[in-house]
Image (cartoon, rainbow over the protein chains, first blue to last red):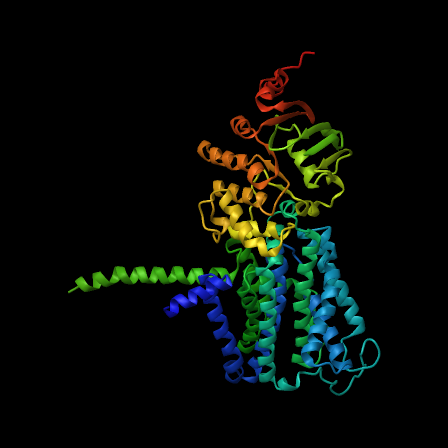
Length: 356
Length: 238
């Protein structure tokens, strides 16, 4: 059997389409590049920025599950990230759990809290859910301002009020103590989380979510327990966001409340929309927009307020002209541009041939 | 068999179903009536979207009204909607498979059951086709495939032929007629197309202002003077 035939046979057995196979190749190449080459290619500044960008890809991924799959608009995911950061830091200071276990436990604890935040979704939807989750995010912010993030202190809060000197660092895995190594580690964790979400989307929950997004009565008539599956979406989104929070703490060694303003939840939603909430690629694009663009602006000496303005205009543009976001629109636009250039070249070539 | 006794639904001062009493024995049963007669409300009661203020529904010996709505699909209740609700972003296969997943059938039988249901309705497109790319006729058939997969006991079809041209309605009629025999389910068909109802339904009940005004063999019911009056809107003379 020719290689092509064997490959397509394998694809068929795994239930994958041609498009999936292409995506798979791009993803494998991208991950190999990000793990093997990226950390050594980037300057220390960009290594840190790339790490944070990958972490925020998980937040955008969670938003994609909620808004893109189920149609639940949560403006509280920034606060869920902060919760993940708090729990992660607390666990990493208080226990000697192996790092992967610690961040999974942090994700699970955040999952429980994030699902509680999602409880209003059982009663309200649309704008009202957005408002309720935003208010809850504000409330969480108020509590965290009061309790502070753990910094190796004693007691339940783990906070030590020290005004001088550097606080102890939130630990990293021993195999990824340096910044480049931690970038590699983060890419792997992010990949695992993306696979986890992909398995959900391709499986029974994904089909149930698609039914809910289209029509709740039709989903109920199909036997979908809408309550359970909505909570499941909040649980999954909160889990990946919680893991992201734990990674974020280790990445920056110390967490402060001002890193998680309530407005961040709104910006995160705007960039998630811009990146595209209906595909997982959108989460990567969103993270790039959220972290890399402002950092570029900093390097270029442009005020960061312009980034906020850009996100506002971008969200407007997405909502009016390209609801599936950049991840969906950009390849199409490029293909259109390619066809246009190709057409122009063909029209010019014969004319050029006839010219004396 | 499904027995409906004194089923009453009130929305404030409006009474869409007023002590509706009817029994559907087996096969394909028609439920007709002018617009606003309460046909869809009746389906919504069976689906669990509307809570009746009085009355009972017993289907194959089970009390349907005490079951949580999402459980009814597992029990064997299926329905289609006036505006078709096949899920656009999923493929034909996934659309049908997701119903199977929430039925009582085992996972092992999923692939063959789903492909069987797609074949049953005579859909002319591949199971991997996205429903969003399909025409109305095909989406209607996907909905019917969703309604017959996973050994249903009671299939509610709410105007499945709405918006279909005659030739396609005829094909749909053939599919509907085969459901009782091949799927072993009781079908209740709501439609305004009397040719379709006559072709499919041995018995038919007529609702008017939430009251069953006639029930029996379809041909007799359609000739009933009360039914003609209800449709034509002439005043009832008693």
